[in-house]
Length: 320
Image 1 (tube, rainbow, N blue to C red):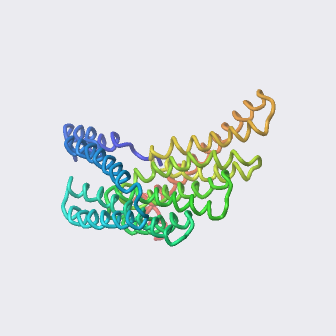
Image 2 (cartoon, one colour):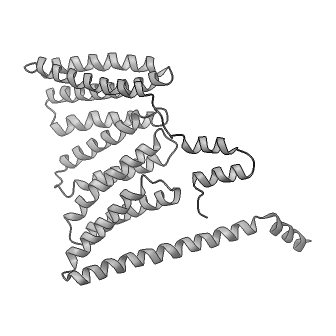
Image 3 (cartoon, rainbow, N blue to C red):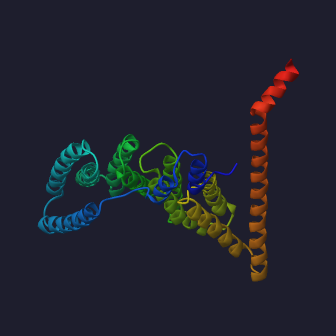
C-alpha cells in the first residue's frame, strides 16, 4: 500500500476530529529543523575565526618540527574536548556548539596523530589510515547520541579509510572508486537506522555513490563495470522509494541513468539504435516496477482481508 504524505495524514487527523484546522496548518508549515538567526551568524563568525586561526598557526609553525606542531594540536584537542564535554551537558545552542567543538577535537587529534606517525617513519598512507580508522570507530560509537557531528565525521573518516586503503593496495584510479562506492552505500544504510541526523547521513551517502559510481563504470567496458553500480543504485532507489526519502531518489536515479546510458553508448555504435535501446531499457524497468508494485498491492489487500474482523468471524463460524 502507498504511504500517506504529511498533508494527507494531517487531513485525516482533522477529519476525525483529532486536530483542528489551525493546528494542522501550524504543523504543516513548521520546518523540520530550526536554528536561531543569531546562532547561524555565530557559526559564520566562528568559521571565519577558525580559518584565521589556522592561517596564523601555519605562519607561526612554518619552520617548526612535526612533533612541536603535533604537541600544539594535541593541546588544542584536549582543550576543545574538555569544552565539548561541558557544553554537551547543556541543551539547545550550547549543546550544538559542543558538537562543533567535538569535530574540532577529532580533527586536531587525528592530524596530530598523523604527524606523529609520520615522524615514526610510517608511510603517508598508514599515517592517514590509522587516525581516520579511529575517528570512524568513534563515530560509530557516537552515531546514536550526537545530533549532527557524526553525520560529518563518519562519512569523512570512512572516505579517508577507503582512499588510503586503495593507495596501500596500489589500486588504479578506476579501481579506487569501488571502496568509495561501498562507503557511500554503507553510509546510506547507517542512515536508515535509528541514528542521529539520519536524513543528512542518507543524503551524504547518496552523493558519495553518485560521485564514485561513474568513475568505476567508466574504466570498464564489460558488465563488471555497469552491474555493481546499477545494483547499488537500485538498492538505494528501492530504499528511498519505499520510504519516500527524497534525499535518496534523485541521486540513485542519476547513478542508474548515467551508468546505463554510458554503457549503451559505448557498446552500440548507431545513434538511432542507441536511442531505441535506452528507450527499451527504460520501458522494461517501468513495466517490471509496475508489475512488482501491483503484486505488492494485491498481497497487501489479501493480508488486510484475512486479518479483518469480518473474515475472522467467518472463519470462526466455519470452524464451528
